[in-house]
Image (cartoon, rainbow, N blue to C red):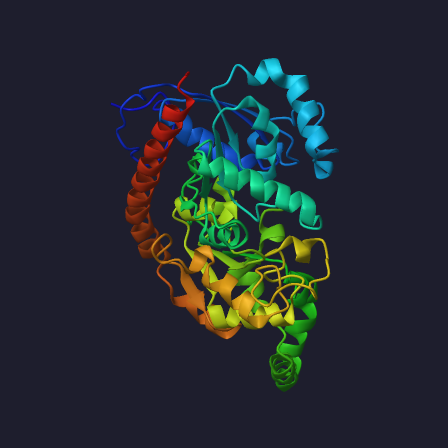
Amino acid sequence: MTGSGSRRQCVYSLPAVKPPVRKLRFFNLDLHISVIADLKFIFEYLGHEVVDWSISGHTWVFGRKRDSVEVVNQGTWLGLDQTMCDDFYSRYREVLDGFDAFIVTYNASFALLYEKTGKPIVVDNPTRYENPFTSSPEKWQWLNDYLVRGVADGRITIVSNNRGDEHYLRHFTGIASQVIPSLCLYTKAQYRGRHEAFILVSRIQPALIQRRAQGVINWINAVVPRMADRLFAYFQKNRRPLIRSRFLNELLLNKTEALKDGFSWQSFYDFKGIVHIPYQVSTMSIFEQYSANVPLFFPTKRFLFDLHKQFPDKVLSELSFYQVNKLNTSGLAADDPNNTGKDEVIKRWIDLADYYDELNMPYIQYFDSFEHLESLLREVDCRAISEKMMVFNQQRIDRAFGDWEKLLAQVADFAKPF
C-alpha cells in the first residue's frame, strides 16, 4: 500500500509504506524553498500533512510567491531574539495550536520560535546551524542550550542532510544527528543528455577565457601558434585556471551562457553532464542533479584544495558564516570548523563533502587538472554513468524513505496527547 502522496508524479518507484498510526500536521516557516520542498514531498507520501510558509527569495523557482508573515520575515529574521520569539508565538498562537509538530530547516535557529508550544520539532539541518548568531556568542549559546535540552527530553529531533553539517553540529553541541541525504524528487526531471556540450557551474568563471575573447584567441592560434602555446604555459606556470577557448566554448559551456534564455530543471539536465567547481561541501542543487541521474564532474580533493588556495573568495567560499560575513577568525581554536584560514580545517571540510561520499554518491567523476578535465569529457561514457546512477538512486530513495518513516513514527509517539 502506498502513502497519500502516491498520486504525485515521480520517475522512480517509491517504496510501499503503511498508513501512519497517527497522521501528523506539520507547520514550517522557512528561508530555503528547496529543503522544505524535499521534506514535504517525503512527509506527504508517508501520509502526513505539511503547511509551509516561505520567506525565501527563491519562491519563484516553484512558481509561488513569498508569504507575508508578521514579526519574523525577510526583513527582520536577522534580529532573532527571545522577544521576537515571544511576539511570534503571541501573534500566531491560534495558528500554531492547530498543528501537531513543526519542521525547521533553514535556519535551525527557527526552532526557538516553537519553544512555548511544547510540541515536537523536527530539525533538518542543511547548513551551519547557528545562523544568524555567528557573531553573537551569547545567542549562539542560547541556541545550543535549547537544542541540547530539547534533544535530551525527546522533543527535538535533529537530522543533518550531509556529513559536513553533522560534524559541525556535533563539534559545537555534542549532538550526534542522523544523516539522511536530501532526495529532491520534487523536480520531476530526469537526465536526457540530448546536447553534446557539458555545463560548467563555477564562480571562477571570470578567470576563464570567455566567449568575448574567442576572436582574439582564434587569431593567435591561426597566425602565431607558438604565442598561444606560450600564453597557455604562462597561465599554467602562474597556476591560473585557464581552459582552452575551443574546449570552453564548444564542449564546456558556462551555465549563464547556456541557460540565458531561462532556467528549468529539465533544460539543465538535457546537457551531457555538469562540471562543478564548488563553493560549498553540500548544496541542494547537487542533490537535485544526482537524483536526476545527471553525470557530475568535480575536482579531485587535491585539485579542489589547490583551487581554494588560489581563489578563496570563489572556491569553497561558503564553508562558514565567518567567510560569508567576513568575520575575524584570529581568536578561533585551531580545530574550529570556522577557522578556514587553516589548511587542515579546509582539508577536513573537503573530506566531508557530499561529492566525495562514495556511500551516498558513487559514480561521480573526478579531474585532477583542467587538461585532465578536457580529456575526460571527450572520452567519458555519460550514458553508462547515468544508468549506474539510476540503479543506485533507487536504493538510496528506498533507504531515505525508510529512515524518515521510522523517525516520524517516533515523533508521532511523542506528539500523542497526554
